[in-house]
Length: 106
Image (cartoon, rainbow, N blue to C red; front, side, top):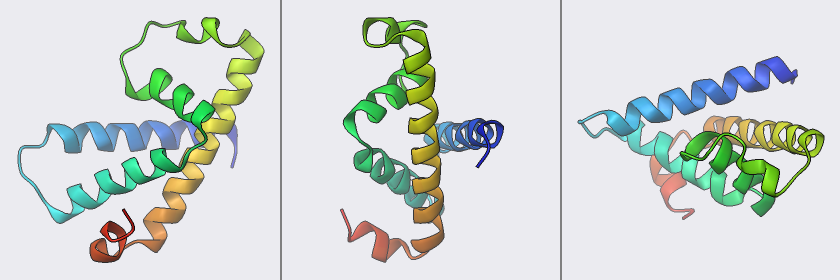
């Protein structure tokens, strides 16, 4: 997967999650997506989880990563984290179409 594609896919996943979280009604598709999202985050390596959460899923100050990494290391690790998350999410999305099968794995 090319870098540009990965960044586009993570933005699509984030936007879908944001819309579902703000939606008033509850549906099976909403529940399934949010479970898959959390499941993927739980499977991530701790270092990559930190990067994903602070860069995309939480409100953090813009340069939070400076306390942990040099600039080149952060960008390299962020790309690995995003690529891993997107690949994992796509694999789980394709293989867990039945919500009952998916929720039993928690």
